[in-house]
Length: 372
Ligand SMILES: *Cc1c(COP(=O)(O)O)cnc(C)c1O
Figure 1 (cartoon, helix red, strand yellow):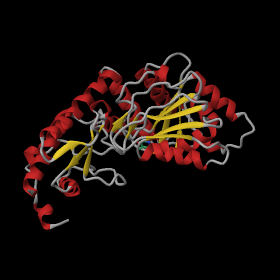
Figure 2 (cartoon, helix red, strand yellow):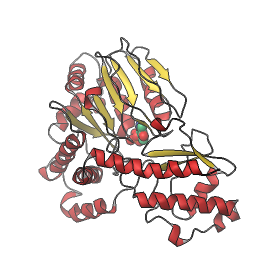
Figure 3 (cartoon, helix red, strand yellow):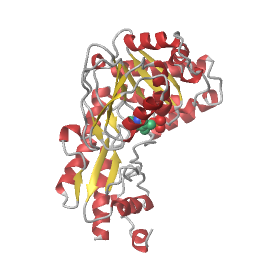
Figure 4 (cartoon, protein in one colour):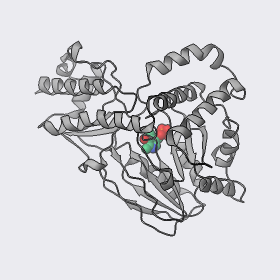
């Protein structure tokens, strides 16, 4: 960092109360941590096979069913390894032989790669869109459609629509789950990790599964296909039904996720969370549109994410801005490393306070002015 960057010190009255604007891991609410701390002596460091931990797994599973207003027959399953591991598991336990993938950024492309390299699956169909936009699925003969609710690398949100009556619709909802509404009738498997909109820690995956998805999982699990146990969603399903995981989970991650889900449900549910994120992200998009040096990266306002705001800069170096912000305690505003744009990426998950988003914009104005 240059002397200039080091010497720009933001006035304390401009600073947000909480400086965490990362897209994952993301801000964890202080209230959740306080409750975890109070529960810790009889919770952390105790067996995940006993009721005392299982009741929190059950709380998380039923809280998510309420949050998503899941129809009868749907189940929440969970396991270790985060979304990246779930992709591997999906290649064994959800895709029968053929899949269609919408790719429009880093995360959707990574799942495609898993499937392309899997020797037991056929060549997938690919529909790709430019980063910053979002393609639509097309009815086909595939047995699985792989969609992404919110492409965290670019800040694009997709509308989830079932392309065909046949085939499972499986959705990577990692940064959307708990912040953006969706209709279970359009989806069969909505999977995610809790370190983004659910303001918990990483290492866990969760999936809301329709009866059709559960049937596919059980069918492939009992088929002749070789599936490593840790990647077998049938094994995850039977453990989840007992409010357990196949192997030891992070107990703090489960507790913090359950706290966040309860907080959202108690505050008004998923619609409430979405409105809060729309309000926060609107502050950023409106601000960027009013500045000569900034503009929203995503051109179509309907595709702009309410939780991950990508803002392009002109005439001022975005990396310098994020470095100055970081030196002043405002962290993780850097653009997605592989996107290669002069950009900031600012998360407005439900845990983030809208007034802190307002403060963030004022701080960026201050930095740009000081650098100018
Ligand atoms: C963060 C993210 C992932 C990766 O999640 P991990 O839990 O780190 O494996 C996958 N997909 C999307 C859309 C994400 O935002």
